[in-house]
Amino acid sequence: MNLDYFINQLIKIVSLNNIILDDQIKIKFEVDWRKNFTGKSLAVLFPVNITQIQDIILLCNQFKVAIVPQGGNTSLCGGATPIENSRLQQIIVNMSKLNKILEINSINRTVTVESGCLLGKLKSVLSEQNLFFPLALGSLDSCQIGGNIATNAGGINVLRYGMMRDLVLGLEVVLPNGKIINVLNELIKHNTYIDIKHLFIGSEGTLGIITKACLKIYSNLKNSQSGMIYLNNFSEAINLLLVLEHYDLTAFEIINSETICLLNKYFSEYSLSTKYEWVIMFNLDVDIEFDYEMLLKKLNTVPNIEIFLSYNEESKNKIWHSRELIPLAEKQEGSIIKHDISLPLDRIEFFIATNKLNILNHFPLSKFIVFGHLGDGNLHYNIKIDNYTKTIAKKINDLVYADVMKLDGSYSAEHGIGMLKKDLFKNFSDQNNFQLCKDIKGLIDPNNIFNRGKIFDD
Ligand SMILES: Cc1cc2nc3c(=O)[nH]c(=O)nc-3n(C[C@H](O)[C@H](O)[C@H](O)COP(=O)(O)OP(=O)(O)OC[C@H]3O[C@@H](n4cnc5c(N)ncnc54)[C@H](O)[C@@H]3O)c2cc1C
Image 1 (spheres, helix red, strand yellow):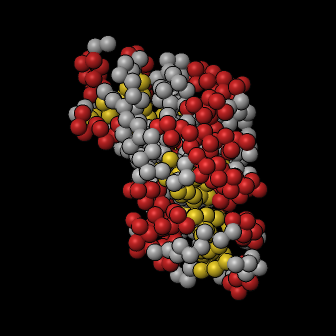
Image 2 (tube, protein in one colour; image 1 turned 45 degrees about the vertical axis):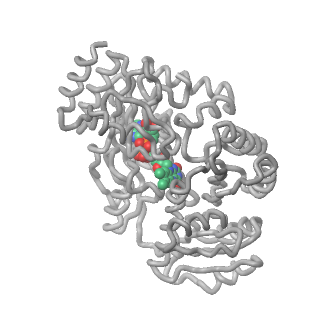
């Protein structure tokens, strides 16, 4: 390939203002958030309209150059960074300049956005109009709506509002052949054969570039009540969930004391108690006549717990901010082998008890950093072993995933596959399901241009 010609064509398409060619500046976009994956790109492009995206795609098809779609680059499984392969020519298409909120419709309860819009920006603009977009992730000030859709993101409000898939009404996508699919539907009901948008939700950048989305929004007029409940016995957490499910429960998170210690170490202003084994953080939507006395009475039917209800917005925000900071505390600590798993609720306690013993048998100095969206059966089940090697990490992963799969759980609850979980996807998938996914990818992207080396080996 004539590299100079190719780069000149890219510059012609987006102009010099919207391309990075300098190796030192590119590096920021070539490394993932956890700094586990890095790969070289020929250029990082920042298209400002859909025609530019089409032209980039057509050019890459002509020269067989791979495209890495990139949002905020907060993927926790290396989905948005180029693969490490010196023979593969790759470019990054970063969506941050296509970031407008196009229409807020408070009657239809919909918002239409360009995919590079930051999640945090969307939430705050809506809240100024007493509207609410439920997706809530610790990465909200960096991640983009397009990335949220491409990963089918989860977060703390899934229990009540579902994952990103449940919040998307319509999409606009540029396909790997440069054609545009416009299914920017705004209707709740639109039942016309296969709902093609679902192919792209969770497709992790392998089937084209999502350029616009129409999303469901909600009224923000309800009050909410958050609280923390400390307890020692995991089964009490499940009992509390059953009590709180009688209310309009939107979030039910669990955190173990080892994780709290980490949080206190790096963010001492929160200083949460480590007297108990576990803490639950929850949020309920409530109305003005809400009976707090009755709530406390019902919660107190669960023995041996200590309850704190948030008494104002500040204390509520403090609870949720401390929850959001856990991944950052983990990042600062380092040496943690991470797992984003889910299990049927009735098997989680058994999993933790048996798997912990299993791991301690092999690695007695392991520490368990366990937290997550318990209401959805989703745990971030992370193990700290100082200076662990690749062999140790592999052994730990094998021990964790074997138990998860034995109990009918999932090795990827919400973060996706990316580069990190390719082998798990191959090994644990139903083989016909795996092949169908591969066939769909081959049909939509016959030149294998999009996010090559992610999800599948090639
Ligand atoms: C502190 C922290 C907390 C987090 N908490 C959660 C959590 O609670 N729940 C959760 O689910 N995730 C969580 N994440 C993971 C991450 O934030 C989400 O996966 C998020 O949805 C990724 O958005 P992004 O814009 O950063 O996408 P990127 O990381 O840039 O990309 C992710 C994937 O989407 C593709 N992609 C991006 N934009 C587009 C587009 N426009 N069209 C097509 N493909 C595209 C990429 O190629 C890649 O495969 C967290 C991450 C961090 C750092």
